[in-house]
Length: 362
Image 1 (cartoon, helix red, strand yellow):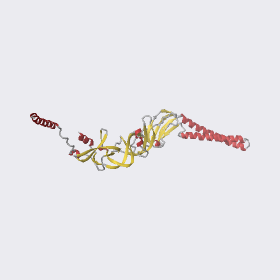
Image 2 (cartoon, helix red, strand yellow; image 1 turned 60 degrees about the vertical axis):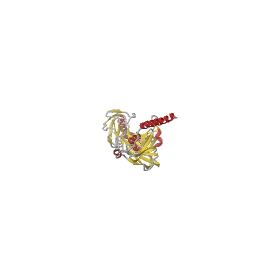
Image 3 (cartoon, one colour; image 1 turned 120 degrees about the vertical axis):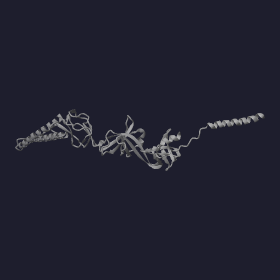
């Protein structure tokens, strides 16, 4: 009995000591994060809104000629080209001389024309003489008809020789003058003075484009094909003009995949009256898909990505900020469409959101 009386106070004292030691080892409660006044002044805080759902897809592409307004000039005859006085990038007017080809073919066409004129003159005289002799009874009707046929053949030969010469420039002194068929810019030039050229060569001498309209050819990867449709609006930006947006529409969808890189190409046609867009420029194409529905929308800068999830910071006061997980429905330029436990009118932190998120999770 005495032993129990001694043991109980001792056990109670030991328990008090143990619990006292345990309490002294606990960490202080974590302080709630509060946005500092200096940071609060710089924050952008926006409201959650209900917006028409507009999805967009960003594609890579490049500026190309409007192939419907491009003229490639091939050599009509073989020879030596001289008087090439235009350079790549020069603007030329329709009919302007680009060069002269000194050609034996052209000399031959000129010679054929002279010969045809001489033959026609002889045939004319023979037919007149035959006519007089036929009237006088000195020539048979058969011979007279033969003389008439010879005259008609000579006429046909002259017409043919004249047309061939005209098709090849109409110059009878052995020169073919290369002229610009349309007004525009020299966008390709593959000849220099005194270069020998052949008419059976597949290479063109010059390419001219007016560049008042250009094509943007963009690549669509297989996984995104369902998101691109004919007639959708497109916004084009380039490295040369980072703050400028060129607006157009998808006017052509090439419904085949490139066998090498597995992409489908689309075409956006753009006006280019100030010639700002140059062929072969790299371009970023934002294709906009307007849907017949609404969704919650916020600035894309309000989104935080962490651990394979998206979050937003709902702001009520500097000391009352909630981290809310959301799902992305679509994006368009600087706007994102989301779903989650948020409502229209909620305030979201749209600048320095990641900085505050990390501070709240420390």
